[in-house]
Length: 45
Image 1 (cartoon, helix red, strand yellow):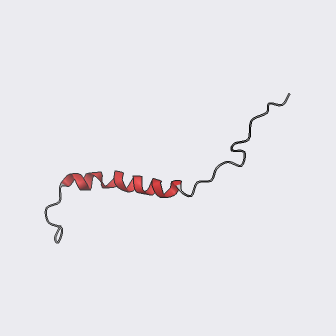
Image 2 (cartoon, helix red, strand yellow):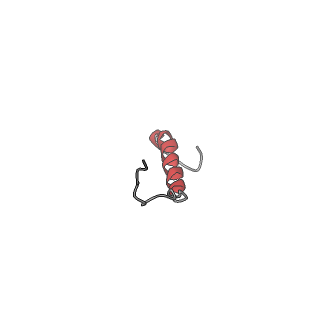
Image 3 (tube, rainbow, N blue to C red):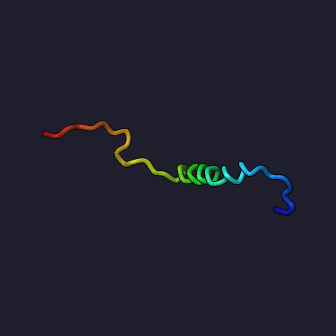
């Protein structure tokens, strides 16, 4: 690749994993907890 120079091939091999981690980290912030979170469960008879 011009303008980049010598780049190890391992960087290109790891790129999909790095992008996946970044994508998942961005989506975790938009997750919502369940409405019943923290409410004790009471079994009905």
